[in-house]
Length: 334
Image 1 (cartoon, one colour):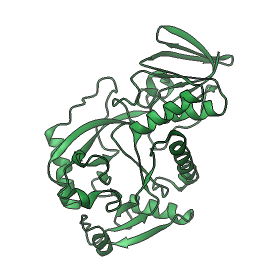
Image 2 (spheres, rainbow, N blue to C red; image 1 turned 30 degrees about the horizontal axis):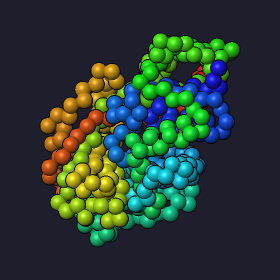
Image 3 (cartoon, rainbow, N blue to C red; image 1 turned 90 degrees about the vertical axis):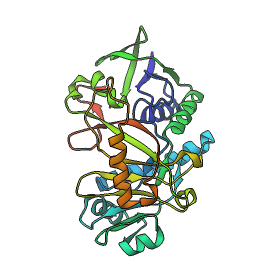
Image 4 (cartoon, rainbow, N blue to C red; image 1 turned 135 degrees about the vertical axis):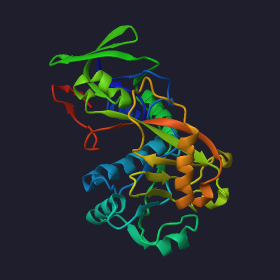
């Protein structure tokens, strides 16, 4: 009997498997798709990392610890998993992104600057904020690469002794005070504890929460810049724009292959979907909506869309994370 089963080996699950195995636990992991696949929530080349969390200052200690763990994983795996390029949170002073980021930065003494529209344009002439917009610039913001992170954490987990089983779907999860039973890949497994990191498929395994978890289909886009050098790491920051339409545009600096374009997306925007029946085709009108937003904010990116894909975003009613024991059994952690 393994000590712990980790169900779902994306960004969170692969890291969970590694850290449990490193602490000496006997770990078995299950993932229904291939390693570092592009069907869930852990793909798309880049994810923003930031300390001045606008959603709630209470997350800042967790984020600070995550920076340490990203650095540790980078060193242990020999992979570059953390790029700190600075980040701009742009909007009007009372918009949620700016006001929330400022509150977190001030409460936790996070290094930052408050910039007016003129200063934003002076430092980053690629951007065209409105006159009444300001920005919080967070020096230690940046991005992590999700696919490379999954591969790195999975490799580290195996090195620490974890048994990771990809292309093995968990069909049933049951639990009692005596342990946890898992049916997967035509076999039955007994473990002391289970950690569910199944993302969009969590509701299928945890019916109690199925009605509270909504899965959204979110588009990600890569546009050709007017001058790649102006948008590369070191000359262009991570950025999030707040606006009245609740379409929060965010984007990254160019990195990797210059032919790959510059990635942008809308934060928490997209229709609710079923993860097993999602439309993965990005329609021309979706690309045009993004292009129009870029033309008003980062006009040098409002050219050719080189590629677009779909990511799944799982949310709760209050938009906070579900972290903790299952209310019916402390042998299951979500």
